Length: 335
Image 1: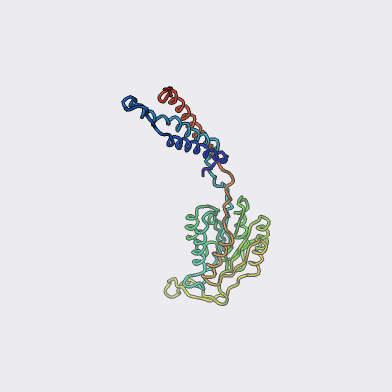
Image 2: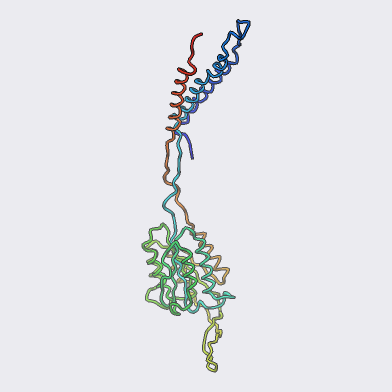
């Protein structure tokens, strides 16, 4: 962006233009007259000299215009992009216990649907760092917080049910997530905890982990997945007659601890959501995506390049040229 630091000086341009206009009118008002009966007495070069005698004047006028522009101080202003971002560090803690294989999110199970929707959520967080924790009877960090969303999605896709046992260590998962975010310097830190059960493993109470998150300024969103009532759960077993591994279905009833998950969210400034099917889980993640918007800080500084030296130098050169021409080529000699 270009501009002028002292634009009022530009009003003098009209004075110079008026000077040029007055000269033009004066020249047109003059009536040429000869007191001779023949043009042969007038030197032929006199007409050319008359036509070019105004060149020094116009050089001076152009020089004045350039000097006026220099006085107005033209500048090039470059706004610098802010170096810091109001980015968000997000850790997704995903339950990988055996009950996540329940197929009430048909045609797939809870875990597969949750992985797909979380991957979609990650793709939307263009300016944030993402971490992934999966848990069963113990918790483990799959992906430390990173800007590399492609790696995060790839590792998430490789996660399997039962990787960490078939229990549900919600407290351990939350503590692991908080530990990943504890040293983060970003202005906003968030844990998204997705589970379908109650805390029945691990040595850390979920409420204690939530208190740790609250003291660290970490917001926790809890999502309870699974429909109410009996749900089909595939179980693999060996056929005693054929020796082959077969899949049979049994029905289990969800044991989601809504009270505990709601308390965790409330203590940390987050929210608790219940997702009874794939569409509800998708809506919940989109809701969190809208709540936790990434904001960029406005530009805090700008570079100003002074450009007055260019018209100043050009104006001085033209002035020198006008003086030189007026004293040599178009020197006025009295007749």
